[in-house]
Amino acid sequence: MTTKAAEKAPKKDPWDLPDVSGLVVGVLGGTGDQGRGLAYRLARAGQKVIIGSRAAERAQAAADELGNGVEGADNAECARRSDIVIVAVPWDGHAKTLQGLREELAGKLVIDCVNPLGFDKKGAYALKPEEGSAAEQAAALLPDSRVTAAFHHLSAVLLQNPEVEEIDTDVMVLGESRADTDQVQALAARIPGMRGIYAGRLRNAHQVESLVANLISTNRRYKAHAGLRVTDV
Ligand SMILES: NC(=O)c1ccc[n+]([C@@H]2O[C@H](COP(=O)([O-])OP(=O)(O)OC[C@H]3O[C@@H](n4cnc5c(N)ncnc54)[C@H](OP(=O)(O)O)[C@@H]3O)[C@@H](O)[C@H]2O)c1
Image (cartoon, rainbow, N blue to C red; front, side):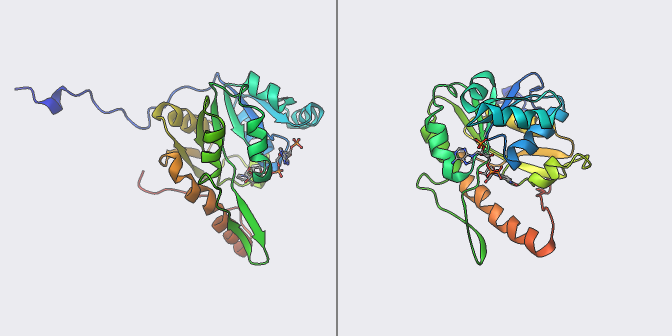
């Protein structure tokens, strides 16, 4: 006798991720530490990368330094020419940057890695964006894009150090569509040592963004570049 359960298609293996190796990755604010670091790692893994800047010549100069086929462009051209666009600008410039790129980012997979943080004499602390998180602000400003959030907990120092062969960390990936988060997980997995883990919908991005304040405290105490591992998955 066939039961309803037996008729159901087998569940998809969550580690069965798509091939993203042919997609072009753009990095807005790619002249900064985080953007350069991600661009370098992805390009070193064979991904086509374009870094963006408010000034095309700054992007070009940074791209020349990074090598590995990285190209530079202004942020708008970077967004237009890319399939996947990582947002790596400071929280201060986040809303303004995205407001100006709504058309260029329409239909694109956007990965927000922005951590809204404040700093005072006690150290780093999490800010509370009106929309809930930087990622939710991005989703509100980019209704025609597929907004996800990931790459918050990386050390730009390790990413940029060519002597570091593997980036030993998990990347928490958030988003509203499984197809989109699968692509982001697959992109993270292009970098040796890195693993992308699904970590929920964008309404849970605030905790993930805020956790960076804790990691900064850890790094200061232990003079480290702490990453994260999620156990038992
Ligand atoms: N650093 C890390 O270890 C790390 C790790 C994880 C996540 N993040 C997140 O990644 C983002 C970038 O961090 P970062 O350390 O690379 O920052 P950053 O170096 O201060 O800034 C990145 C780039 O953004 C552009 N920029 C600066 N101010 C801007 C503004 N008001 N509007 C638009 N663009 C502006 C600049 O490029 P142009 O002048 O060339 O346009 C700059 O090179 C932050 O939101 C941070 O929370 C950082």
